[in-house]
Image (cartoon, rainbow, N blue to C red):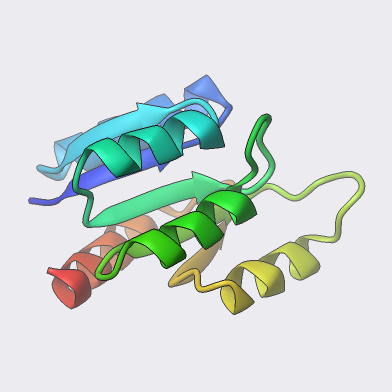
Length: 125
């Protein structure tokens, strides 16, 4: 069991990911934007953070950079559905360069998400 933070401005996506991970036995907190997510990350101890890229206030890339600077031993999964203005491959590459452990596209494969979470929990304990 791990403590996981899910950050996404889409309430349905937050709920679905949370339900899926709770069913898997994890403790899951959620945040509706990057600002709230970073506040929770600094107040609690998470093994894994799952963050969307395109969000209001602070986007997922800002969250990723802040988490990598502030925390060692935290797995970070970045999810994205892309953007009208930004190419999805550019977003993926940028997230990887900034230190995301994994980048996943929305329309999530929950078996892949499950195995990725388990892999990161094992790696970051």
